[in-house]
Amino acid sequence: MKALVKDRRLAVDVVVWGGLALLPLAVGEWQVGQIAQYLTYGIFAMSLALIWGQCGLLSFGHAVFFGLGAYAMSLTTLGMLPGLESWTSSYLGVALALIVPALAANILGRFLFYGRGLQGAQLAIVMLAVAVVAERIMTRWPYAGGMNGLMSVPPVNLGAFGLSYELYDPLPLFYGTLIAALVIYGLLETLVRSRRGVVLRAVGADEARTGFLGHDTRALKLAVFTLSAAVAGFAGALFAAQFGFVSPPLIGFNLSTEVLIWVALGGRRALITAFLGAIAVRLAENALGDLLGPAWLLGLGLVFVLCMIFLPRGLLGEAYWRLIGRGGAR
Image (tube, rainbow, N blue to C red; front, top):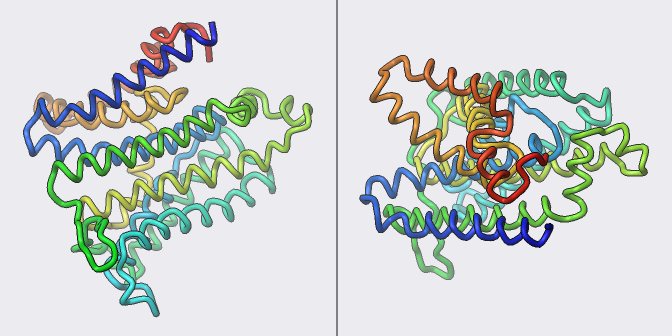
């Protein structure tokens, strides 16, 4: 049975990633560039699915780490780091986009998990407050552009040794982002399917019992929270390079709410469904905007509520778990 589930999971992965790789053959150049942007949101969604779907940590402020990564990338590539003005490498920007959010999450997590041991609604509300405060700080910080943010952020430059190769045109940008998403998925999925992944799901199901069995649940939550923040920061770095700007809303509550909807509708129990959920919802937003006009948010909210009531594993998640032969699992 386990071998069958593994084979079906592999088949789904091949279909999804192979289909995405062939997508430029079926759509126009403009759509390719647009979907490249949505792949970035998919990486962000996987970072939330890792802590929410696997470890039961619901965060209403996950965009804080996305925004920190975006600002780290922007300040680096714009030559605004004090003492490092000449170091505008995209490689350095990505490194800081991983390190800064991870460090912030690690420090914050020590207060959240080692203090009162917050979880559930308490953790969600605290992270909401963190997102609101972070957005206010960035709005009032002139160094980071204040309310207007930072403009003219350069695209990712993969050049080295004096050579330059910017991911600017839609097709290279699409495949560069797709490869990045596949690498992140592979790393996270390896963790999820490992013994450590089993323990993380046990923490989410019953933390007290998992601790009673000898596992340091606080350390586990801190580690996965830190890893999730690093992935979110990486997604933020790609966003900044693709869109060419960053602004305070990237670090606030609105984006945190959006990613919750993407993950919930896609399916938080599997990384691949959360990833596809972000892409599908962004595409659906465009269609709903054309169909419903300003009321498209109401339509999306209604779908979200119905899904949470009748399909708690998500629209794509429900199909995924039935497809791999675990219809009643997880």
